[in-house]
Length: 498
Image (cartoon, rainbow, N blue to C red; front, side, top):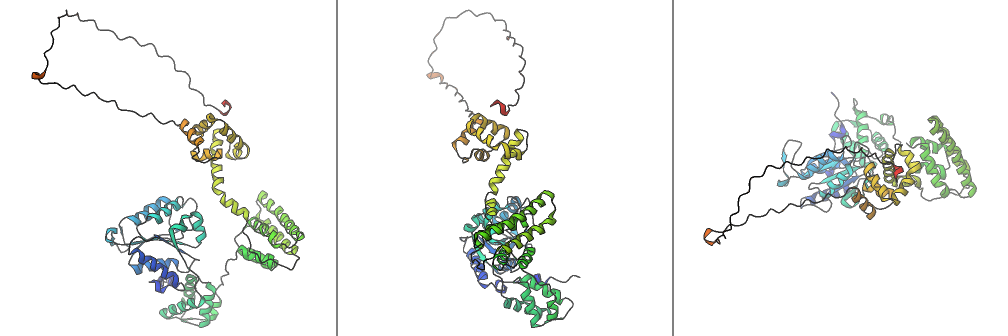
């Protein structure tokens, strides 16, 4: 029989059991109590912080403390817009059943806590259309909603409405002393003896990740009644994932090539991206023009290897490119004076991120135009996109042709012309391409004439009788002329007709 997971067994039951974040727990409780008085200003709460510090546990503890049932969705579930709408939106407005099978009616004041875990991990086909539904949920929900994320910036980057429509609660890493206290309590309940030094080692290695600390303790205590410091030292120490700022600090400030390469190996960043980071910060870190020229020369030599990788798809050359960049920059920096400015994120990556939607729209438009002229979208994008734009700008008939034959939408035609979607040119072109159907007016039916009673009716004047005409012979209907042969169907017009 498998051992019970201690992270679930010792999950906090109430907000008072949360380790290291009392102010965050108090803010959650205050927000929950506001729901008892009606719908509060912020209908949704965002819990942000690094993994393993108790965000999900706090949300579940809040539900237990308030007597609420829970509806939970996380990254392991498929979270398309339709599924979130079916699960979360329904739960936020209609009745539901609790986990124990009891019926919870919204009319009787029964509350449900809707938890969307890892809300910042919405991407790709699996989560398509999810963010607009989430925004609709936090704006119109009648039940409390909690969004849980590791990176608050990433969540708000997907939609700016998160900042204005939700209340943020930040969870910090608990201090080592708080982690040690919790580990000792678990050992007392499990009747496991542990040395003080072993507790300190486990708490230090976890780097604030409470979940990891409990799992390490369970792995050491499994089959043992005494956990010693020697056993704790055998744990593989978790090296915090070094980011590019630490790499740049070792490269430009410490000028230690070995340390920089070691940090780079721990980073999940490819050499082309590393080159962009270095290039962005060279002008800020070099003291003289000679140093700047030498650093750029080192990057250019590394770029030769990066070009060979892209052509031959032989990624073994990446090591040579990394060595060229690191060693070249360190050797180029001769001035002992270093800068203390903040390292900058590559502006190229920022511009590419901001223009992602524009590039996607441009690519989709090129695909439609390419299918119209029987060529690829890349060919249109690289060779003839400007000609399409000029023709569509000058000729209304050509615009109508594109709308009908290529199936352009208002936004796509506006993008091609470089105007807004509500521009009068766009409206007139679509009105000409798809004229509104004429309104069908119902004919008024004549009311039958009123007949007066006989006593009020005027006597009819007698008229002279006329001889009756002989019945005429039935008139034959004129024969229809033979149908003319239909003209051949008009050929599809091409671009050369304009």
